[in-house]
Length: 191
Image (cartoon, rainbow, N blue to C red; front, top):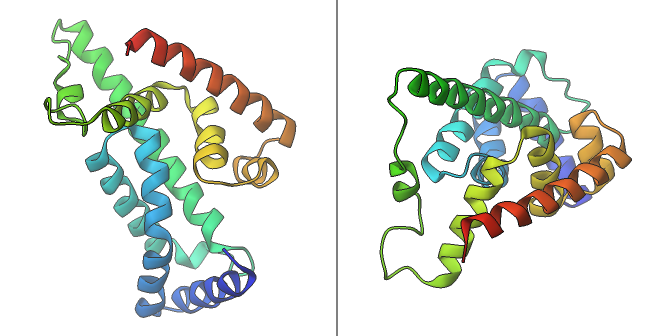
């Protein structure tokens, strides 16, 4: 985002905070693609990612009175999205555990429903991308978040550290560990 875009973003956020729905709609238009990419990588499913982005914007709209218009809107909405992704991941982990307790373990149907795995017409590139999405979704949040924000979203380690409340060195270390874990997961899943 250029300095001019950041300025427009700040003006839109300030107007939205004062109740301007059109300004908020413009913010949605500016940020929805970025948020979707983050959520898609975080949860590994496109439908869930769309839902999380929508929930994030609803939460943002309802929380605008607490938004500090002196701060950039992008990091604020990304923080809301990351919290939604964390909650989603926790809910699904609890659900899986309960299913295991009652002997109702989920089948691999979730994998069958994911994009890129539905038949021989899917090309190799899409299959590899789908495998990567599933592997990223399996990473623990402490590794996934720095990886998604830096490697996939293009934030600097310093900006990701600020976003996540970590040191720059911690982000660097977690990104390194995330990449190493991703390699392991991809090797386990096979070609």
